[in-house]
Image (cartoon, rainbow, N blue to C red; front, side, top):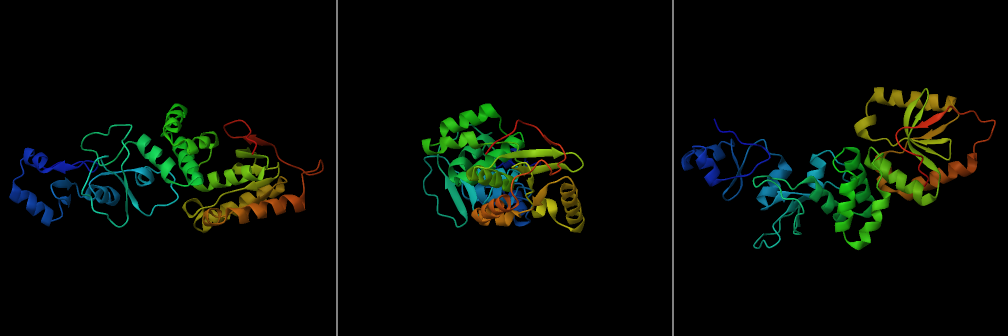
Length: 293
């Protein structure tokens, strides 16, 4: 029985070594039991669509496309990013495919359809806008895909203009929208804490100036009526403890951060700072020391 790994690419000689004749290979391709994305290259039908596109383009899945498959936040999932050997020639431009030519820092297994995560993160740090790059790195740190030592190595390799982003990476953020809001609060010069535990409520994304709670909502975690009911009950519990709360949605955070910033500043100015007569339940930092924007 033919055993093909969905993350590997195979050449004609590999299939013949498994006992397949030319006629049998051709029949399996016609029956879609074997994919042939490029002349002389074969894949398992279980290979992902992005990886198949990468093989068809003559390379490996890379950059944000690989990271998206690993569950890392990336802002733009449009084009398929493909790593090709630095001196490759005669590659035809393919719509929807973005090629990366720089040499890899980690050597993937010979049959692998994908670059290593470190190289994908390095590529994504250069390829994306600064905010999107920070959000991707925050996500990778939070998922345990890169540690502090790995970040230090990565930022030694990026162009000088990107090295200042190192100080902005914070793995406490658990989603792309959270990173974008964190960077916004920092730019506004506000005092805030990330991932704060409030007794009787649970963990919230941000507490700003001691009383304004910001929860970053997305369809992935806040869709459906039951989730909305739970969110509204959390808001009431926060109000009972002296906190105001707002829930910007991911699409608005990405599309118009300045507008959200104006809303936050307006609330802080009109309601004003917390007074001694304003009750508040104790808040505890979830994992790490207080961060000031």
